[in-house]
Structure formats: C-alpha cells, structure tokens
Length: 487
Image 1 (spheres, helix red, strand yellow):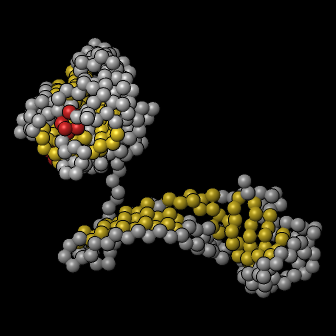
Image 2 (cartoon, helix red, strand yellow):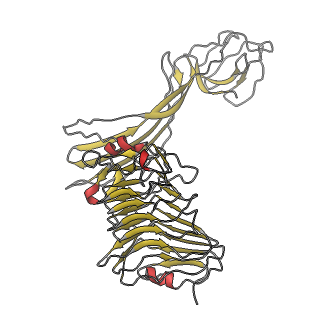
Image 3 (cartoon, rainbow, N blue to C red):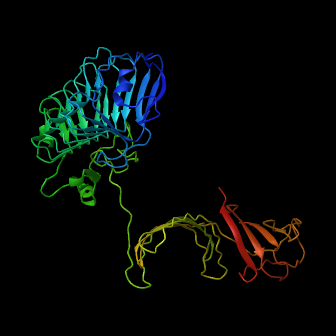
C-alpha cells in the first residue's frame, strides 16, 4: 500500500525506508499529514526517484533531518550522494497543501544530477517551503519553473559548485520569498529570467560567468551581495536598493572559502554583517537555526566569536571580563549581591585532564560599613586549557545599579505617634506599636516604612542596645537586611 499519511523514517538500517528514492516512490495521494525524518547519515544512491505527481489533498508533507547540519561543507546532517544524472527531487505534486523540505544535503557523486530540486508541470498551487538545505554540485541547483507556484519560499539555503546555475527561477512569482541564500562558485549564481519576483539578502559570489543574470526587466533586488557588479542597484529592472559589491580579490566574506566553510568571518561582518534587510515578518532564523539579530546577508548570520585570552608564562593569566547583572542599592554605600557562575574547563595533551564543569550558585554578600556595598554579579566563564601552563578565559559580566530615591527618616519614637516603625523580637513575637523604652536584642527585626510610603525596609539588630525609644541608625547597631522598592 502506498504511503498516504503518518510518520516515517529514512535510515541506513532499521527505518521505514533506506533510501531517498524509496520514500518518494512509495508516496500516494495524501489522506493525512506525513512527517518523514531522515537520519543524520551519509546515504549513497544509484537511482533517482521518479517524478512526484501525487496530490497533497490539503495536507502537509514535511521532510526534515533527525539533526540539522552543523557545518556548511556537506559533511554533516542527513546527506545524499547521487551517483546518477537524474533529479534528486522532481516535484510535480498537486495542491492544495504544504510541502516543506528542510535540513537536507544533496551531493553530486560519480555522475552529475541535473537538479537538486525542480518544480514543474503543476496545475494546482500549493505552499512550497525549501529552507536550510545544502546543494553541492549538480547542473542546476534549485529551479522553480512552474507558472502555478507564485508563493513559494526559498531561504537560508547554501548552493555551490553547480556547473550551470545555482538558483534558476523562470516564472513570475510576486509573493515568493527568495532570501538569505548563499550561492558560491557556480557558473551562474542567481537567474530570475526577467520575471516578476523579489530577491533580498542573497549572497552570490565567485561565479564563473555571472553572479546575477536575468534581472534587468522586472525583478526587484534589495540588500543582496555580488562579486562582479552584476547585482548592483542599477542592475535590477524592477528596482534595487542597498545591494553590496564584494571584490573577490580583497573582500572574501567567508571564514574558509577553500574548505567550503561559508560562515561569515569578522572581515566579512564588516562588509555584510548588518547589511541585510530585516525580514522577521517572514522568518527569523539562519541556516543553523540561530535567531537573526544583525540580518547578515547570506544563509549564515555572523556570530561574534568569544574573546580568548592566553597565558603563556608561569602563574600568569590574562583575563577578559565583562559583567551583566542588576544591582539594587539599599542606602549609603550599600547594595545587594547575587552571583551565578557557569564554568567550563577543557584540557588536552599528554598528562592533562579533560574537565567540563557546570557550577551555578547564588551568593549573598553584605556590607556593614560606610562606603561598603553588597554586589550583584552574574558571571559566565569559559576556560579552555590547550597546552602546558596555558589557559584561555572568556568572561561576560554586566553590572547595572538601580538607585532608590525615597527618603529614609530614622528619627522619631516607636510609638502610636510614629506608626512607621514596627518590631518583631527574636522569638518571632509581634510587638506591634510601642510607646515605651525598649531594649533591642540581637536578631530583633524592625520593619520600617518610609514617610512617603514608597519603600519598605527590614533591619536586624546586631547587638543588644537601648538608647531610649529613639531608633539608632548607626550600622554598628543595625544591619539593613533587605529592601525592595514598593511598586
């Protein structure tokens, strides 16, 4: 019986299917949603699937990996090597419904597959979402050649080494999302065939012929990057804005182009790190699933690397520190402290031990004299030892101080005439309002409300003392134990 609904897997062994082709060739007209989870393994196949002509029937077909690729070089994740000249996915399905293909890696093998994805000969539109995929090789990486599909989504994909065109879009698609794709070292990077569509935040780089082509009549291009002046603002016939030129001789934006590492370097960040357009109304993450903040052009958001400081001498350690925490002041020179530390240590080499430690704690530190403060610190530290006597440390610390401005008036007797002061003795007996001289014992607690009613304070007696019935405000007698602004 053909597959029409349910959850299935593709695994080298023990799965519902053991090949990419077997899954697609078993598909029937959908009667319910289908989820196909693919193991993060290397599959090698000699036969391409037949064209997929079934009907979605208003349901969703979702193909995703058990774990997404962790690199851009086609060496991780669910990856299929095609030793054939056919098509990895010849999409001719009928709608309505939704097809989602994400996190797959398609690799040219001993023969050159014609496409990783081709969409064509579709009569009834459906939603096509193709994201976070890698295409290495093929003749044409991704092609949407069907006039019926006008609202497809192609984003956060990496396509490289195509012998013809990386991304080939041949029909009008005014509501399509074509964004944040990285296309590298193809003969032609991006072609729109002079159709009505919008391309944004795409990075086409190092093409043998043209980074962008077929855009001179109707196509809109915003915040894209090119390396041959074929995708500049004036090249987009439908209008272009904020497009970036990268000189291949001096402006390589990648961490390691030769090793197919298409993550963005610090030098690349200066060129395109914040040059993209915020498209968070359509999607919010990048190729790795990282939430976009900077909106870097291309599939990979630039991530600021941690600062590493290395100590190379005996007993010497260089430390980079930044702090993040909220600290509330409680009076003259006093504040409250909380500490949270996360520490990881890794050592490698002969005679060295590999340690990973997670330490979380909260610590209260109190100040009792003038000018002394309790401090609140949130500390996250990563230490990595890479050789004898060498330790690299990165620390993030941020401090913020909140000033509380309400007046504290310590004068006045503890009496019905001054009801702001209430006292709880060390046996937890509530003494209510007093109008007589009282001896304050250690650990007696006083609850005080400021005259304006804006704050409450708790004071704890340090020693036995009695100075009439006037509260003594010296820190030698009382410790301000806790405060919180009244809201």
